[in-house]
Length: 108
Image 1 (tube, rainbow, N blue to C red):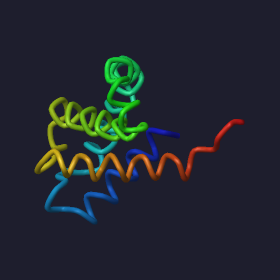
Image 2 (image 1 turned 90 degrees about the vertical axis):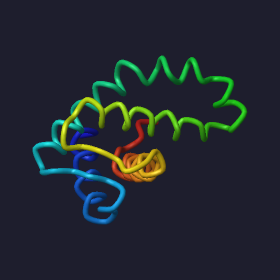
Image 3 (image 1 turned 180 degrees about the vertical axis):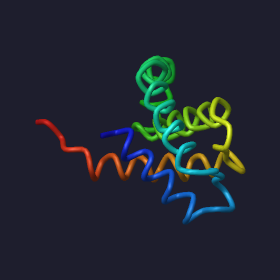
Image 4 (image 1 turned 30 degrees about the vertical axis):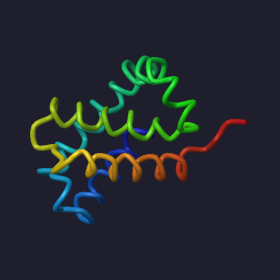
């Protein structure tokens, strides 16, 4: 489900923000969503642990920067998926965070 949401956000963001986010086609969006999911599974816990002091200092907002860094890493790994700047990656990270919080049910 998370991969599908990320792919939908990538496609929507490419339409809304074409000057900052470059996405060649739907296949690239699917591959990028898969790569991002794998990076989130493997690297994100380690990055969050390493950045724990910054996370505490910013009350969790530094996680947004970690997400943008993972998006930039995805852009380096997937051809046809790119950002014009780090701020563009921050915008896409914000969109992904909002979409994931809206569409993924919390199991409490």
